[in-house]
Image (cartoon, rainbow, N blue to C red; front, top):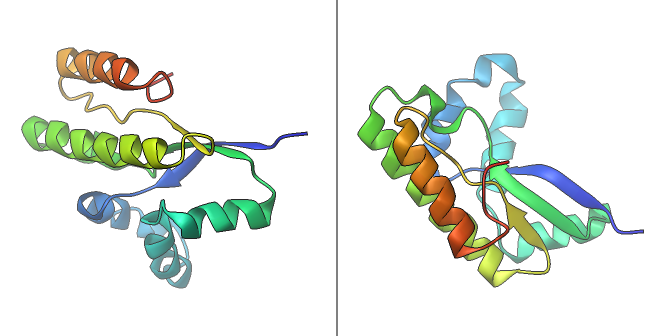
Length: 128
């Protein structure tokens, strides 16, 4: 039987400050160890999946992502960058990674366009 991890989280460098805003909800030591692992989508992550018995992971941004970004333009930029990182990881490891596009809902029209573009780029990178 194959095992698939849904919403396997990752983070980009520019989204780390938004994630750090949630640290009051988690153990500080765990948080400091988690960030480097959340940034890793290469072989180290694949090795960890193998160790855990996972065949495939559906990747998504570790929350809150751009949802807490007050500037819509910056939110759109950060979401695009995250989606580019996701698309590259999926291209590099197509049999191991799928993904959920990260959308800047501050601008619903742009979010719909981003979702459409992500789905057009790869059928595995889109919001549900």
